[in-house]
Image (tube, rainbow, N blue to C red):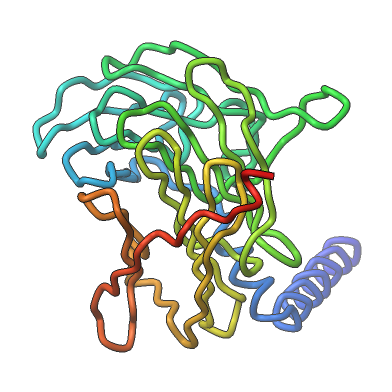
Length: 270
């Protein structure tokens, strides 16, 4: 009987210690732990194309999850999926991405699975280190160019966000760069990957920095806005239909602000 009571006391002390440790964590750490909790069975996540026409719905279940493609709200197909996770779909509905193997509940994966509009796997893009070895990346954002020829991924970092652009057909890494503030909140790619627009922020401040990258991954424009971050805003940037510029979202006025592409630098000719 004494042993049972003693064990109960030990368990109680451990629980209290763990609770105190959690309470003493910085707000940022606590928030991140909440973000990484395992998804409950039956929960469905929806991912839309930039034009809002296509929707990929991923439903987490045990032992087999499922995913489907909808066009303007009408389901075209539904099938099982072994690696459920954050999806992306091009504006023409012909290119869809899901993460390859990794730690789904923590956001890590070792690459990108590329599917066609019928949900058939056409290619795997593996994340590789400088020495050619494979490794996991904690991808926070995935964006596909409208016609589906380029895929960009965004990762949060210590000093700045990391953005990488891949060619869909070959799977080749085209460029990788650090830009903006540490947290990446939104990412989109223009036609043929000519530009990538990232919305980044500094955790806990609400301050944001928008960065425009050219097709070689060079930052050619940036703009900072204070207290601009809100969890209620799902889209922070978009390219204009005329192909001459883009828009960024301003939280204070709850409106879109137009910006034109800057003139190309002469350094490209050197």
